[in-house]
Figure (cartoon, rainbow, N blue to C red):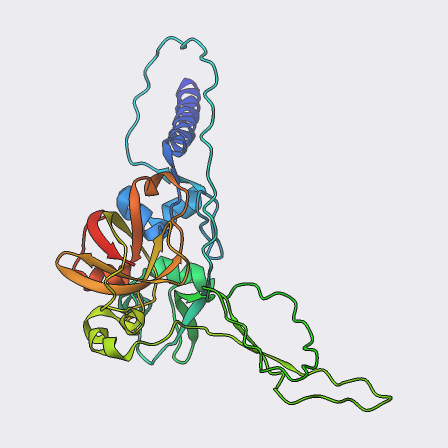
Length: 336
């Protein structure tokens, strides 16, 4: 009878220890704030754990998506040892860090889709489009990593610039002009061109009818004027070299540190982009680094975040690859 009681209490102790160890393991986690471009696969590799463990600890599923600034618990593999210590004296609560919301860049992001071919795997497609299996699963809300031939999936995000088209004031109806030459309105810099097609002939309306207003035409330019003389630079400096005047001797010059931002643009169409302060959105700049040069379009200013303090600009990863840059920070010279 005594042996049965010992066995019972021993079993209870083992069960209690088991659950205590699980609770202790769950408490051994660090909180990581998500940055732009980070994925669960990258976090698992950084903290020497698995995507599944991170998803279970945070209650995630295949439809969960990461948000910039989100705090994600990361499990650790460190074994804990119970140590009895005196309770520390309470300290005044420390102020929480202020999370600065990144300003929206004047560009839209659209999905890059791909139709799965027979025999292709999720791993091979992720490698082909320079992303991860976990990221493709999250983008497409896939229940697992199984794909079917003919299935259309999202494999990346494409930056589509919105074009720096300023607000056009309300159009006024052109009045008849008598014995006057045509009026041409000269557009100022960065403004769209509005043409008043009034004509130069004298207008004599019928006695009892009002004059018909002349229609107003609006011409919108979505790209800067092409400079044919610079076409020879396109092969080495990218698509926007067509729009940069290489012979202009009055260009401004700036030098400083640069970093990289990720986008799927530029890998095939050679359209390179930068984020830079004090330069108009839509301007074309010429950037030199590592003894190589490319031309890029300014998408907008740098986000107001701590990581960008002291930076002159950020350049798209496709442009960095052409310049042969592999560092997180490097020196550049800019003409604009």
